[in-house]
Every structure is written in C-alpha cells, then in structure tokens.
Length: 304
Image (tube, rainbow, N blue to C red; front, side):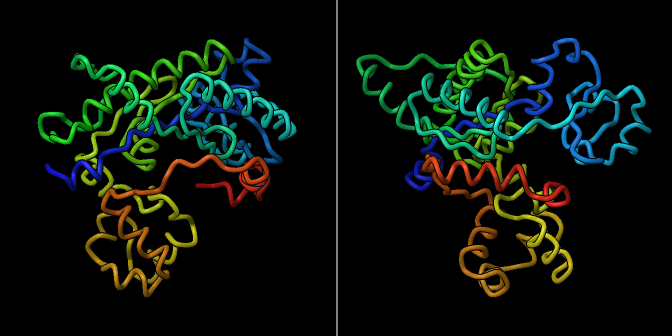
C-alpha cells in the first residue's frame, strides 16, 4: 500500500445511532417498560419498537395486527409530537460536539456522523515527541487484521477512533440516559454499515480493505443514496438486486446513461466500497427541514 491507499483511508469517521430512539424516549419516561416488549404506534403501524419486542418477532413498520399475532403481550405507546424528539436529539448533539470538538453531521433525529481525522492529527502533533503505544480496538472488528492488513496507518487510526467512540457513547449515556450503537470506518458508508452489525449498545470497526468484500452480498439498498426508486429500477430493468450483481452487470458508462452523472458515478463507486462524501455540519434551517422531511413523510415512504 502506497500513496493511493493512504489517500483512500486517511479519514476516520464515527457513526453514532441512538438505540431505538422513539422507544427509548418512552422507556426513559416509564422505566418499567425496559424489560417489556414495547412498540411505538403511528396510526395502525408500529413505527419502531424496543429490542425486547424485536427478539419476539416484532418488526419496524409492521401493521399492529401482525405484531400482535407474533407478540400478543406487546405494549404500545403513541408517537410523541416531533418537537419533543427534536429537543432531545439536539441535547444529544450538544453532548457529541462538546465531547469531541469535531465536525458533526446529524442525520434525521437519531444518527450522527463525526469526522475525527483532524482530532487524531492534532494528537499526533502534540505527542510527536514519542511514539503512540499500540491501541487495541474497543468493540468488535469487521475483517481480519491479518488478512486485510494495510500499511498506510489506517488500522491504528481506526483503533484510536474506536477509543474516541467508546468514550463518547459512555458520555452520551451518562449525560442523557440514552444508549447508542457506534460504527468506526474510513468513510461514512463504512462507519454506518459497521455500526449496524452489533446492536444495541455496542460498537464495531470496519477495516477498509474488507469493506468491498463485505458489501458484495448485500442488497443494493445498503448503498448510500440507493433508495426504493433506484433499487426497483435496477431490479426491473437490469435484474440487479445485490451489490455484486451491480458490479458485474453495469459499467460506469452504462450507469451514467441509466441514472445520470451524479447518481451513476455514486452507484459505481459505492458498489466498490468507495465513499468520498464529507461529514458536513448543516445550517440550522437545513437541519430542521431535514428532520421534518425524515419524520413526517407517509408511512409507506419510511419503509426501508
């Protein structure tokens, strides 16, 4: 690995996801619900549920009748006014910013991306008088360091990123009472996918050289920006459902012709584990509109 590897893997990104956010808010108000199957109801649908309910077969965005068939003892609570969730989300965002002093991007109400690349670089300069002792990964690791080794220094940076993520998650729980799951990677896609592997209240690091291998058997909807409309078109027009099929069946030229320059290039790159999207802090108005768009769209549009 040389200059190219160093450029590909130079960032250290952390993804933080509040565990079953709407249900967590209800459980914080009624602690007795923590050990019981709980669903948050929106009209006739269970919009989300706690992990006790999930272990008993309840699924997010499932009709209430279906949920009660698999879990008759399911307890439901109505979804609160979105402004209440927004206020709680902002409190958690403030903790994230205070604890890390890094660029933070909030997605919806319950997800946060942090770019700690500069933070780690500053620590390197401050401690340049001695070598860093070898850190160990905190949490799980996706990919074998022996099989997917990289000489650019990213593995050590990710180890240190996992330490930051662990400290941050502990601070969030201590200051707000909410548990979180975390992912650490060299891109936003890697961090988010890693964080989804072990939940709740756990964290996972994705080794960058393993990412391409990891995603090949996933559905194309796992790729950033590949929503329902694009995935349906890929399936209906090209017979593509999995990431590996996307790699094998369509060239960059064909993807650009089918989906346009921006989307075509994005699909081509992310299918190969390349995600150059920056972590960016949106303006307050943009943030609020993003919340509204994510939280208030129709039920069918929320199904992933």
